[in-house]
Image (cartoon, rainbow, N blue to C red; front, side, top):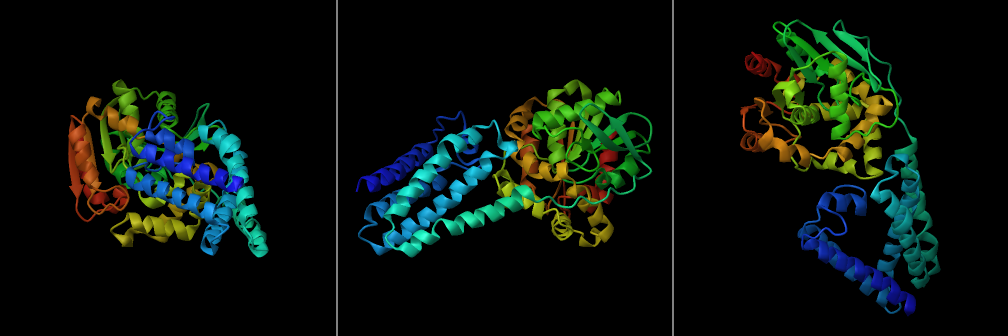
Length: 435
């Protein structure tokens, strides 16, 4: 009976912790984001409607453990619990050796607390099971499943496709951080456009064609995007790293003050850079930008979690997956040609670009940019497609309320990939604003 009480007590303690967090408290972490990343290795809400059902679940597990000697149903529940613990313990061992997690709170908690606790509870639960056939199944099957999935997530790498021939506007510049690829055309006051998140610089081609008639236009692939290649493996893929990379690029080209633009993730990077270095950015062009502390679509939120992010990013690097994802960004599906799909797909197969998919989703803390919005002094043009399937168009009005000098335009019949999906309507707005 003693081991039953011990296992039940652990679940009761976990239930109590969830009830405590449901009050809004985040101890021992300073905030909910830090708490979530330390507890589960990713970002999830600790709102009452999330954590209270989990508390009830742990109480039910405690009851099942205590009644497993008298109830067949309780023993089935304990068997399922044992299988889950076997899977979690195996994952814990895999995570302990993933270098990208080393040094985080979750890494050490997983290594020193979570995984040993799972192994101990698993040993107790297996002892409580009476049927020998259950004991033989509850460990090997989940362990084998997790091992196979872990090998795919952490061992598999998509085949990197050959780089395309550089365009006539392609340029390269060496810095200590990376070999930056950028497109450049035109003369006059500089406009710097950041390749849209998970897209190459060529996604700005229509805008490059238009704006270069009156300005010197630079379209740069930041690390993890397009044809830019990092020199090392330690790049952090967080806001400070991305804005630092942008600053290094601007310094190398002696661009001291620019009009800065971005779409999606890169809109958020440009916004963050302008907030950090207001003297270097005269105006901002933000197309459906990140920058608000809002949840992303579920398919992107899943990238924040260990194993799931690596697995989804690598499986998503296939041409068919890229084609489906790109089509979802467009309202005008006829624009999604095989050539366009290849432009998006090929850079997405490079090792650093694959890693960037999940590393950026985990590392970008948009609470920082949102908090600084009222202090952002530059004139800002915000353009949003009303049929955006990635970032809801309602966010445009939130930016309008928080930014003191914002001009907002929403475009009917346009999706998230504004630079290509609605280039004929976007470019005149940009031309007018940069004058």
